[in-house]
Amino acid sequence: MEAKNLEYTNDIEEQILIELTKLIQSKSIRKIREFLDQYTLADIAYATENLQPSDQLFLLRSLKTADAAELFSYLDENIQSQLVSNLTEEWGIKVLQELQTDELADVLEDLPANLTRKILNDTEKEKRDKINSILSYSDDQVGSIMSVDISTVTNTLTCKKALNKIRRDYRNKMELSHNLYVVDQKGILLGSVTLEEIVFSDEDEVIDEIYSPVRSVYTYDSKEEAALIFADQDRSTLPVINRENFLIGMITSDDVIDVIQEAATEDIYKMSGINPDAAEDSYLKTSVKTIVKSRILWLIILMLSATLSQLVIEQFTHISETFIEESLKITIPVAIVVGLIPVISGSAGNAGSQSSTTITRASALGELELKDTWKAVWKEIKVAFIVGLVMFVFNILRLYIYFLIFKEKEVSWEGLTFVIIGSSISLFVVVIFAKFLGTVIPLLAISFKKDPAVMSAPILSTLSDALSTLIFFGINIAMLYIGVKTGVIPTLAV
Image (tube, rainbow, N blue to C red; front, side):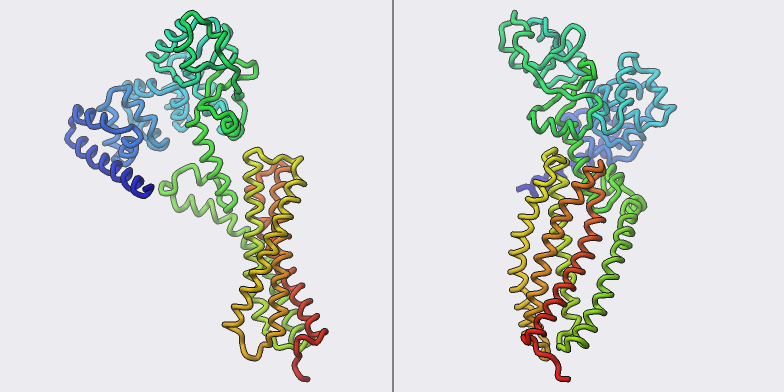
């Protein structure tokens, strides 16, 4: 069902693009307006973004100023910047003035300084001050995404007067939501009241008697902290206040969804060794050069760090070859032992990544704090012990089946049995070590106020590879030695 819906959506968007292109070529403004009334602005925006720049300009000029502004707000930021630079001065300013203050601030942030100054100079002082306030916050602060053109009600108003004010605010294009925020005469936030409570209460009842307390966020709070509060409060909006508790604006669920998407994408990129700056644009709009620059550094770092594993394998392969053939005098090719390394190191990497990802996610969601460090470590060790035991059993079964099919005639089953048991014990130990490292590394990063998503991948990869190889060779050589000394593994005749 989902696939069909997706295909249907794409068909609609492509159909709009084709029809819109034809109408623009016909230069019929009336038909363009009638056509656009049939679809949502999101679908129309997709089609607009795929038009030629000259056609985009013609389309916007064909619409009423308010409609053009609303469509403009849905467009990609890069396209918005291009359009603003090409709009005629008087008409373009009118379109931009129709935007909500926070939307206009987003547009101005990406424009050249001279064009930004020109637009601000033509903007009324109250709106200009609000724009400058929004632009003063850093990109990771709540203030940078808040809506400031919001409808509020004073606690001393009756429900009848409050409704009249809400109607006026609606006509003035103030942003309304299901929850309206209540302030005192000075503008200090008191709480919130729903539209239903105002409508269905007695006309003469005062707002002060029906409003409820509300959780708020500060303008300087991080956007990710606000997203966590949203999840706890189960609301569609949250009020934004300053240090003196004056209501400054609000953030909506739409804003928070964008924050969550950005944060999730950033963490995924970091854990994969990709510069998160590459996530700012969509994949198809990102140049090959940008993608290469975002990936190559960590790939080189990981390749260099793998030199340690290479050195360990090289040295132990030589030691194993000498020890097995010359000291133990048994007929087990070193290739059989070395061939098991990718399975062991791969399992170590996977086990460690599971723990690292779990801890990083729990920390990002505020579920895990530094005081919970030892609880998390002990929990992951218990998980590692159980997982290691299960993998120990399955690895024994896997290797017996494998050697039943691919065993060479001159290799004794006694020797292979010790290799199978030795590698399975190695796997058990390696899984415990890897999960321990996968838990401790992100927790250490958090304690040093570093991003665990960045630190975990390269350090975990290097340590788990090197340690798993050391453990594997050490245990397998010890097992073969025990097998020979106990007389279980036959040796070559001297």
